Image (tube, rainbow, N blue to C red; front, top):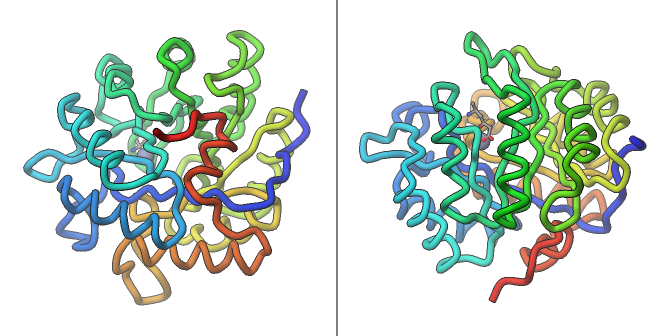
Length: 282
Ligand code: KMH
Ligand code: ZN
């Protein structure tokens, strides 16, 4: 059954600080070392984030799925913050399925799970349905809560298909991130967001991410639909016309202000854990 998202009193803010695509030389505020990421995470928690969506870089600042780095990153973020730690299993469009599946060995609280293939600018972000199933069932076995990432309408339908075929996710709660505005995917408009929300599984919560120029329209539309927010330099490098983003906390702080204005202030990490069906942090 699908019937849109269930409402929640507060706003879960996820920060996606780094991503796989942007070069440090193009965005000096991008956190690419572990120290930079940990400091960014601390500051984003203070600004209102409850979840951090993590991609890591190697010593040359290139995106990597190196397991040792991922493990060190999960440990360092848990040590320094209360944030829910989410690792990306999407990686970069060049990453293979085995490496993407191995990300789960780093034992994050949650992991992203992209629910289908999509054109990604001039590239293709490949997510074969059998691979999506493998990631989903591996997360069930390892007690990692998936965040279903949907870049296109068919991806939302695949969430329902996964639930019907394989049962509920670890934690029991379905949380979907609608990523709008990728060239090749759903456009970053309020109308596209509303259409996607209308087909979410019953009782699902959702957050939304607007890529590039879609950042603010999607953020405002998500709040208007009772949704949660994902912001960060993975998707947004321009703060306002002619003004580059200084750093991730700047984006989190603006999202927190807008969520508060919408009468749904940011959830703290403990409330985020409760929403996502995760055990409290010890
Ligand atoms: N970098 C994109 C190809 C995810 O993190 O799960 C995929 C991505 C999605 O960023
Ligand atoms: Zn990502």
